[in-house]
Each structure stands twice: as structure tokens, then as C-alpha cells.
Image (tube, rainbow, N blue to C red):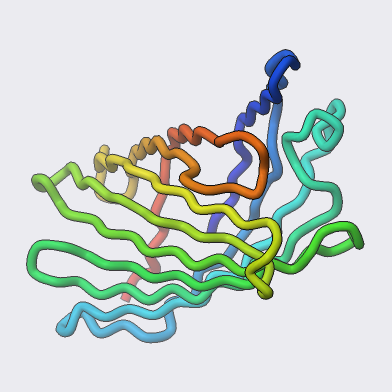
Length: 184
């Protein structure tokens, strides 16, 4: 299960920086194919993104109006020295006729550096399905550090390589992940 809300910032040329809470996301990851012996895992991860009630979040450009239904399929393969993850998702806006349905294609690569620390890299592409609008290509790099068996601290930094917008995007993230695993 996931519930997250970012502290977001947006700055356009010649405008002051705008900061606040961005769109919150709630999701439930369902692992339906797990083969630890082969290192193959497949999951569905339906999520809903929504605007947190607050002062002018949409007007500041920190969140989209309405909600977005996100339907990703995740495939993970563990190799001896690296883990590869591929995600494909459909992002369907709800209650906002001005936004288009988009797709996301994401490839991630990670490697444990020791028992507690892992490094990862990600390439993400987002676009409308006709590949003509709302195109965004992002590269992210990050580190994860286990604090306990079920608590992970993570940080990432990224940059847009290509965007239909007139300026680049920088991404910085820090968070805690609490893993809840049912007893077998």
C-alpha cells in the first residue's frame, strides 16, 4: 500500500518560486506472479492521484485539477549483479476534460552496494498515445538505505532530457518507505 504527497516547487522564467504540497497518491501493489528462484516478479499497481485540499495548489502549478487513475504493470527480473525493472502505465484523467490520457514507459536498473545500501538509475518516458503531445523524457539516479528490516530511506535526483515544455525540469526526492509484508 502506498500513500504519498510531495512538497513540490515550480518556477517559471521571470516568476518567483512557488512551493506547496503537490498531488497526493494512494495505491495498492498486488504481486500476482512471484518466482524467487528465477528472480521474476510481476505486479499490478493501481493508484489514484488527487489534489490535496489547500491554498491554490492547482493555481500555483503544483498539481493538476481533478484526479488521475494510474494503472501500471511492473515486471522485475533479478540477475546476479543487477536488478532490472520495466513499468508500463496508463494515466487516465478524471474530472478534467482539458487533460489527455497518457502512457508511461519506465526502465530501472539497480544494484546492491552492500547489505544496507543500493544504487539505482531510471529512464522514464511519458507521452500521449499518439506520441505527439505531453512528451517528457527523464533520467533519475538514487540511493536506498535500509534502516531496519522494513524501513528504507531513499533519495533521488533527476533531470528532464526532453520536454514539450519550454524549459527543463529538475527532480529531487527524499522519502521513507515502510514495507508491510503479510506473514506466510
